[in-house]
Length: 508
Image 1 (tube, rainbow, N blue to C red):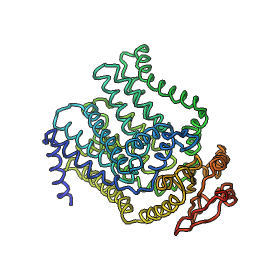
Image 2 (cartoon, helix red, strand yellow):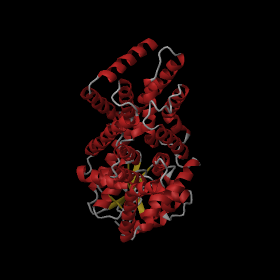
Image 3 (cartoon, rainbow, N blue to C red):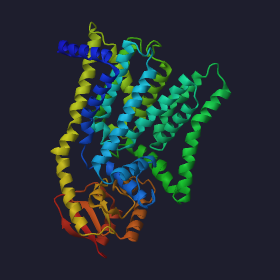
Image 4 (spheres, helix red, strand yellow):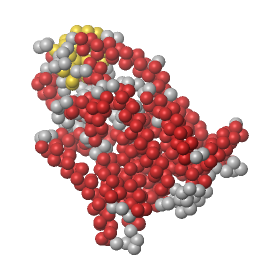
């Protein structure tokens, strides 16, 4: 087994070291497209439509966080506005655009690797760079980690890499423009997800040690230039939401709800924790094995390997802290550590010594992690074509066709289920701002205190949604007794399907 594996490794090493630039990029592009199929065939019924529904409402005259709501800062909705403009409701156009953005991230990552590894142009450096970028393309395209591609993490990766790349370019070129780009990347990260700001730490730490001899004036100047895009970006959103009388709603959706959501997640009241930790364990183990291997060989922080060992170390520590602070361990959260994971695993594999039993064990364990993750990722494409997710989606289509046939474009509906797929399928706007039933449920059940139920009912009374869609076997969202009482008082059963029911408003 090891002899076969070793022959493959030798072949790959020879190819990666000897292939021309064009040959390698042809291979990388082909490899990327092949592995990306996992994401292209992620089940259609997912969070993609939450972001898209909110963005659609916003771009067609609604008010963000007032007429359509999700607990995210505005940048993910701005990105979905782009998807709506380019592709309307066509999922395949969306995934094509998302794929282009993702591959841009791969190219940026390749450029970052060229800066991070020392001795550019040497065969050993070429191997480290090419191995790392291939591993990166592999991890970000696993279906259970990419989760369809349309989320904060997939988009955040691009701006994380951009911020680090332009920051390091500044020290190479001393051109202040790169600091502005780095600050812009950090600002976008913050307005994708507030906890992404943690990844600004490697830049801050590096700055403290980089300015030699220490100059307070130079440090302040650099910090001001990096911070300027962050300040401008922040002021833009504050002014925008202030002028739209929705500043408080912006703070709730972007920061306040998420802080309580994080605490509730740690208590295990949002989702199962152990199952997701087991799913993502190969990622954690691969990172641990690579770090341990490099530490044992005394090359983890070797200046002969890295352009900036301190930056790598601070990036690693930041990534570990990010993992620790997660309360809900959804696999796609781990996308944010894919770059540092790929860098360290790539370096580790480039240092494998076949004569060492320890190295062979490291190689074997990392290989098992890779194969295990890839096999598990096939579950989502299987669900797309054959699994329960496909059957459920087919029924959703039938429900949507019924609702669409009995409503006009001016009618609104309520889909009191997780997600927003029904709004997409019916081409009908939500009659309440909370496009997923999970948000008012959490506020009610965990006593967050944001009065989502009251706002939900106020929206419903104002817009008088004609139809209500609920799940027949609902042991989760029916816990929200306040909303269930409202539904029973104002809606009556009209049509029953296998798993869903359609109720009609009494006054309609």
